[in-house]
Length: 209
Image (cartoon, rainbow, N blue to C red; front, side):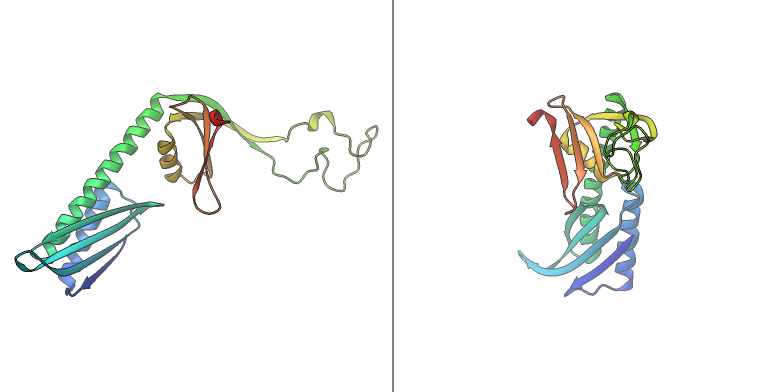
């Protein structure tokens, strides 16, 4: 995990940076092993009757489109970091618990389906490759009876999970899939979430048609 430590009117020496690295790496190993990067900022500011206090902001990127923030204050930079880190750990713990609950619901509630891979585009609609002549007895442009559907290259069993829309988006975010079909718990209809070219997630709800 890449960790950046910066200070605003606060000296961030090697001891403090080492404390930050060890603390965040420990949290990542415990709650979210593939955290990507973290930006930690310390600052000093007046507060109440105290002449000065230390504040710490942690912005952690724990995955694609998954960000966690923690804030802490204390009489010194170390204490401020520990409070901010505890907030991040608590949020990661809650997130991991929700992910585990979703995984259990997926195991308990799912529909069977077939996942088929079709031959990619490259044949004309008549089932012939571009420029290929029609067989004897078939007029140009006439479709051969067996060419009604594209050929199936591979086929395997698949599961359709019963999820809420937010659960489906979260599951899509955790995988490398471009599209995922699920059964909407609220409506019982088949829905689809997919990755858009602009980086957002699209949602198709068949029950709304």
